[in-house]
Length: 157
Image: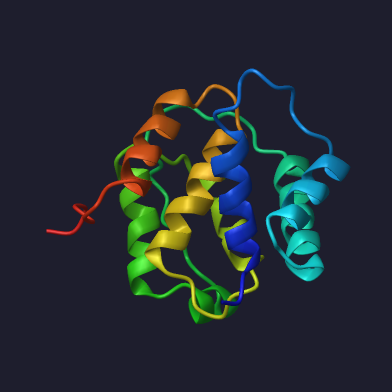
């Protein structure tokens, strides 16, 4: 099976998100752990760069009021984010899980993945990682975790 950057990120998230007892591992420790887990150098490098960009992004906190604006996607975004994924991002905003600046960061990180097609499951994981990386959004992060680990997609009616 060919592993992707998202597979590496999901492994890291699942391995380290709940390990409150241990300090956050440094880059070399992460690399060693990922190599032991069997991931390739290309995927490891891509995942570490992806995380660096996520951590380097500057997203200002926003008021919890919903945005009255409308997001217009450019051609490159439309090529990678189909109607379902765009609709799901909008749904997360309407639920109050995502703020507009977080949506923008999630879109940026989704487009940075090394996949041609982006599906709802990838959106869920990326949004969860974006929320987790930002302090003060514990409730939204908890709601997103519930959506990620839910058996059936219950958002479409």
